[in-house]
Amino acid sequence: IGASVDSLVAPKIGRELDEGDRACVGHALEIGKPGHRVSWDNAATGVHYDLTPDEGHNEIAGMCRGFKLVAHGSAGHSKRRGTACQKGPGLWQLTSL
Image 1 (cartoon, rainbow, N blue to C red):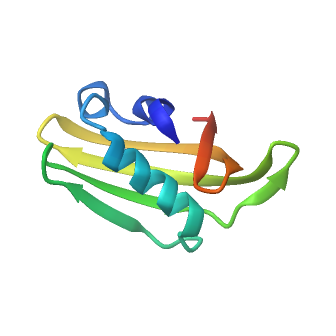
Image 2: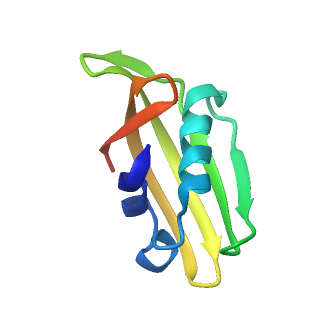
């Protein structure tokens, strides 16, 4: 899902989103069950993430899923909703926030 995920979280927290976090977001969108929260902690940054995907839908852009991403860290708390579309196996691109 790449660098565009950084815009999903509060600026201070977003700067702490690393490649491992981006991989977790992509993995959660790839295989997460609709309405079931996927959580992970980044021990290096101290940020806890919860991502809840929806069931997804097909669009011209391919398979797309809406989701809610919540981040908690020493720099604050952020809650955002977005949509990402699959561009290939394990590769998701943000289409809206």
